[in-house]
Length: 297
Image 1 (cartoon, rainbow, N blue to C red):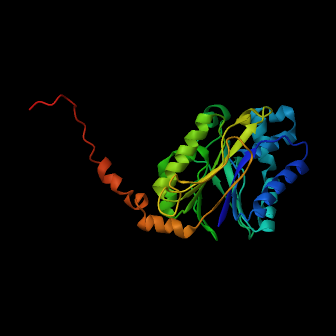
Image 2 (cartoon, rainbow, N blue to C red):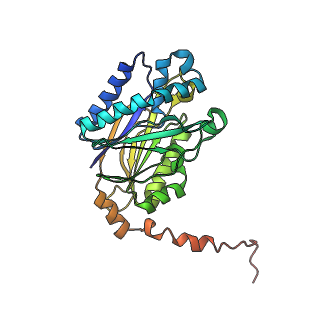
Image 3 (cartoon, one colour):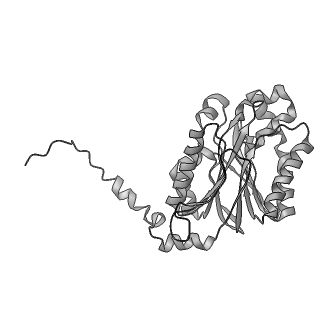
């Protein structure tokens, strides 16, 4: 299959048609390149706050509510585009009210009208301490015609046990939409994504927001590069990097993925990280604390 990861800019929109035209053009471009699965970034939907005007878009709480209020309409657009182009789309994540406070939710759309969502599991300091965005529902494994897919939203990719739960459930592809304002933040997610590909011997798709949006303080600075990773082993590049875009440059990054290659590397790779994972349990249970001292005969 062909997968595409977006390095997606947060743009100002004066009208709904402006947003619809942008999203439609991005999806059409990926479809023209024969992509079957495309991934948009974390909080890319925050550009919809612009439709409420500068005052609302510039207010953290106001922007949350404004975007959440538009997601039903945005979901319908994504669903239509997925059917029209015959592809799977992970839409840009957005706030969704699931109680007293919002969660960070990414929706998955299928070519046959299928829809589902994944909520972020572990919140960053900004989400916890400033924005008051909460963790959501449990991790899900999506059984699709392309393969078994899991979603780890940004910070979630930095926690190995979340990915392990998904790969043990059968995930072959992990989607990592991200939104990071600093180069260090981008690298934290990238290192995490590459480590998850190594540990789980799977494919990981990293799609970030890029560029400046000073009118929305939640996503005012965006640093990253889109990429698609695999395990550095048989059937994959030695670097583990299947495809990589330029830093903070909008556009799609594409890679051809063979699900059979994931199965092969798990069964007969040069190393067997996926199979040998459980051997850690015995080792960590027997950690010995010892006082290090000079050797004396």
